[in-house]
Length: 115
Image (cartoon, rainbow, N blue to C red; front, top):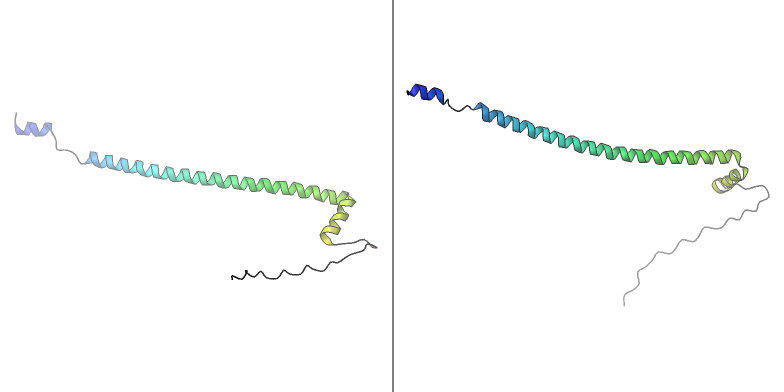
């Protein structure tokens, strides 16, 4: 065996294989980080969606409550009269109105004297 034959059998180690391995590992690491960020963004979007859906549900309930009140005010004279008296301070002719003076303001609290 000559030295030329030995050199052709065992070529010098190639630098390409470790570089490709490191590049692949780096790419996988970047993909994992991007996936984690996307998952967190998805969770935040789902939480916002749940909050918005809850607000929509509450708003729908308020709309239904107000529709029922509008219907009662339009068709029920007693309800309309009660609302006029309570919310607008209206009175019927001949009603006696008693106006009470405002309550006196409470004196400022003073700390007890220490002997």
